[in-house]
Length: 232
Image 1 (cartoon, rainbow, N blue to C red):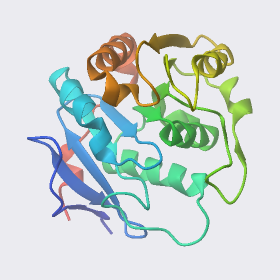
Image 2 (cartoon, rainbow, N blue to C red; image 1 turned 60 degrees about the horizontal axis):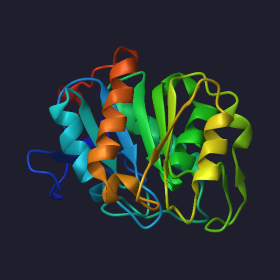
Image 3 (cartoon, helix red, strand yellow; image 1 turned 90 degrees about the horizontal axis):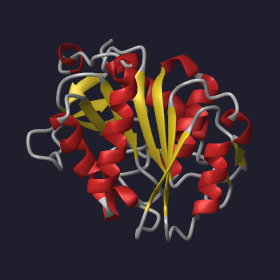
Image 4 (spheres, one colour; image 1 turned 90 degrees about the vertical axis):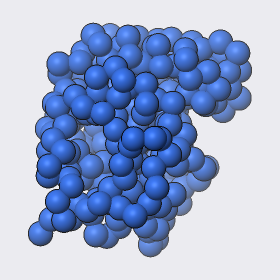
């Protein structure tokens, strides 16, 4: 059974399309562009609209850029029971499957970064590269269970960059730098004069860092296939 279909939800970016993936829950994904797949994961309280600047920029840079609404957010279905990062990790692999790729470049900010780490812990072969922004490897305040993926940092075996914000009150520079120091070969970049959401507060600088990093590992990712995700 094909579980991907076109969506009636409007895109946040002109020229983009929105699809719904899966049947329980259904995950809304906005995408635009052609090329290697880049999937962006928002933080708590956000949705796919927080990546509007990056969607357009990456599409113009030769990528298929996609951003989801995590389950319980935006136009995606809600979930029953406690928040499960493992379930969200499976949701992410379903997105990759919908675009018919084995590996994708993953970008996660805040909670999205934690989902990325959980996904890597369970499905490391699905990653072409990883960008973590404003992220902490531990997570308990918004979850029924404590989440700790610090040990995954040392196991990351894909090109990784960590982006911090100079005035981030939630994940300050000393913390994000520590995250980068725990990842073999990771790059660390600090965006000045921003807080926790550098991709929104200074999209030009965030986009510059992201595209420069992706250019160095572009061919590790698979080109997204459109026909499959548009049939229902």
